[in-house]
Length: 392
Ligand SMILES: Cc1ncc(COP(=O)(O)O)c(C=O)c1O
Image (cartoon, rainbow, N blue to C red):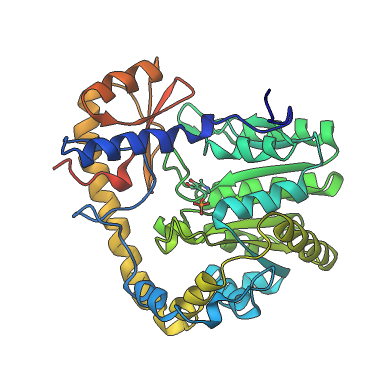
């Protein structure tokens, strides 16, 4: 007799990356030389997790009895203020044109869940890129929404016309449209939109929003690894955006606290939308994880609460982008010989992706040589250059 519900969610396909990375780790522990290009965590040249020294100190300072208490459901006001300063540091003017609110979450995944549950109607579709983070689809389907994909690239360039067509189609069909754009440092291509591309899209979103409500979920998980990390916000400062923007922030990558789980969803819009956001994000958060980590919120406030530390973070950040640039060069040198094909248009970030035939078969044959990569849709091989420390 089976007890599992007929409605249980058992599609584990988006967990392949974790399975492969565990397998690689187990082999390493047995002393086997493994090249593990699966998981999106930035390691330093010694193979240890790269981390911002002031955050390491803050994590120690935040070990207090007080931080064992429950946090408020959306996280405290100080965290909201500090995060807003952090995200908009280069252009505080842009944010002043909007009403805004913040809800802390369990990582960037939690922020995306808050957005999808509350800004896509049940059984209706969320628009996601045809090549993207594997978990978008899983988190939408798990909460009873469907996904439709927009073409991200054509001839290795951003497919702006394809994106526009998909948005119009989805808007007409659903009488509203909600889409995810992962920028900068898109996972898995490493592409970042330039200013012109953002301006064209923002203008188009405004036009669509005159007829149908348009919600942009901007996944900025890798924002601090981009050379010009806040282009989107500079663009909406210039072009007054009318649609709703939900920014999904992940502390996992920015502050190397992957397994500790801190993120936040920030809403930018008009007064009415922001009042709705405060209610629905608090209700969803309470229902799913009850309250975020008081400890991590406190560590964030200690590490980044004073704008005087921004130059030190900028210095750290630049050293990390430099590290990734070197990794990129080593990766191309090593993998171009093994995977003789073109890559998606890489600019920066944690991942590089090759376009191949029979990706699953190729990944399997590399695995036999103890080289672990992530096959995607049987036509891409993703290389996590961020964790490749032993190619030299
Ligand atoms: C594109 C993208 N968005 C969001 C996330 C989720 O981040 P977190 O680990 O903070 O939940 C990831 C994690 O790998 C990601 O690659």
